[in-house]
Image (cartoon, rainbow, N blue to C red):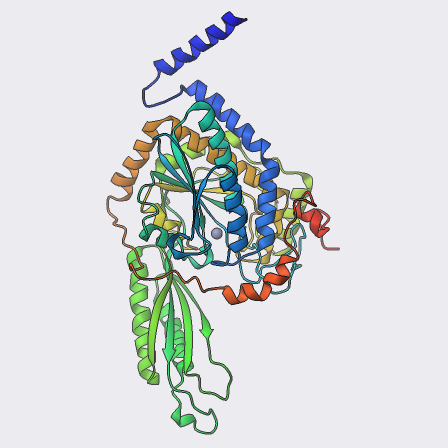
Length: 529
Ligand SMILES: [Zn+2]
């Protein structure tokens, strides 16, 4: 018996010594360690489920993620992570750091905020708000940090057991829907000493891509006009309407739109349109998201918008100021990390969906007239490669981080394919077994990929080589915010104050219920009669 152990140890050391000195463990040894990591993630499925359900129930809008941040950092602190609260002067932002030895510094991020007016009962295939008009997780940001925490806890155990060296830093994408934190983190130095970043985001398949991502970057700017109040009927000739200016700016931009390249996208809302009709509005504000696929294109739109604001002020004899309230660079993802991750995606595979999961997915797809009506993904998507044709679409301020350090975004299958996004239907799956299984699959991929990088120094060198010599070859990152622009942490405060008391009644209590569906008394799935 003892001889057997001795032999086994000898074989093990032969493996370790015979391989490239860049690797701590041989291919065979690390494969075994990775299988162990997968099992650790699987074993934590219950913990993952509770985290996903809990954050879903908090339903907090950008910059108001108080409960979510408090809850998630508590779990990390308990596991020995050092928490740094309020980074970049954002009260709900934080980093959680755990370190062993001198290895690479690995950043794991994901968003946490939700969508206005997207309140929705999970597991119900049609529109049924938990609280009418309240925010809800109609983007699925309740699942990403639970994915990262589950992965980090497994990685930490593996690092301790096998003496792998490195540092893990977890962080939340605060106010992603306002694209208003990550450029600030970069500006304030939180990514200066990071080797690479794995970002996770909910999707409807398990996937990763490299090169320029589909979609746009953007600048988010609010224009504030100021005129002169007057009695709207008694002395309208004495008034100068700030609202006229804001409306004229909007009209001018809509004319401009005809001459924008189709890859550009722009949208606006009025954030102040006066108080009541009988007072000429002395103040009015309009808020634009200006999007394009290149930094230069975004800055051109910004310049045009500034000119239009000047014109509108001139026409109405009003004044204006403007402020940047969010920015996002177009995203570029790292080839080496993406390829390493994709090999792990193939190992992990898609979750096994139950019949109930598929019934719910198909019913939701039908409800929203989706082009896709065949339920949840059962075939892995291919590794996303740079496309020769650029595609417009949404943005994510992970873009700024992707130009600072080698970065990828892992998309994990916690949601239903073919939904429109930023909508109550995108919340339906997000506290059901679909979200829970998708999060576990995502956590496995993150854990395996991090372990690959901890084990093999060459991977990180190659990732940095791609970053410095391919990605940065013709592009220089220039922040869109100045060193003084503050993060707009006042946003969403009033809306959250309006709903928080009501929402509190629905916070998930894992001490009394197994899952959130059970607490809400929802039969899974609930279909239209
Ligand atoms: Zn998102």
